[in-house]
Image (cartoon, rainbow, N blue to C red; front, top):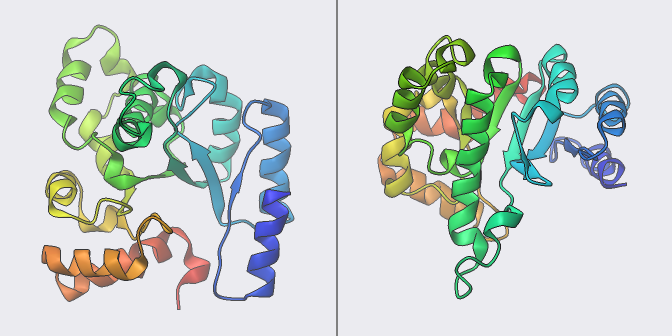
Amino acid sequence: EWNEYAAGLVRDHPGRFGQFTMLPILDVEGSLREIEFSYDVLKADGINLMTNIGDKWLGDPYYDPIFAELDRRKAVVYTHPAVPNCTVGVLPEIRDAVIEFGTDTTRAITRLLFSGAAHRYPNIRWIWSHAGGTAPFLTERLVRFAQNEKGMKERVPEGVLAYLKRFYYDTAQAAHPYALASLMRLVAITQVVFGTDFPWRSAAETAQQLEDYGFSAEELRAIDSGNIERLLPRWAR
């Protein structure tokens, strides 16, 4: 019902909306049918996954049949964090999302890397919310883990940095120097796409923050539209 409603918005307002469809992820066969329906009938732009569902993080072998199909379709997969059961209410006076959204994005990226899934499914184009959470800050730890932990080099044969630099990252809740300073040392401008986290933050506010950061006009055009148009060419004007 969600996916058909979203497809209706796309149909009724040409040029204004795209669609990333949700999957009934706890049902693998149902998810495979929904992928087929989303692409072949609804003409979706991509797929939306959460960083974890049922405390299974992206990269868990559970997802392999789904990832194999997404890889075959060269899917663009947008991710959003979810608070895992194990951390709910750890700091009762602070909303879980304040810390856990950034942290859980990093858990998913790390699981994807060190399970070998990022290497096995190279055709999936991943977009990580919130500038990749804490992953840019923790990059050296991830690199050293892959170098020093037995068996990890086989799972990330190109090296951690190669995969991190290949991913895409959005600017939702991250269009500020504290996040961007780390992200922009990790990736090229080609890997950054515009995100706002609306309704929590507005597009105008995000755009102003990106301008204030000091990106050039060419870089701003890439973030605002150019990079996503390469991923989703039907939206290129």
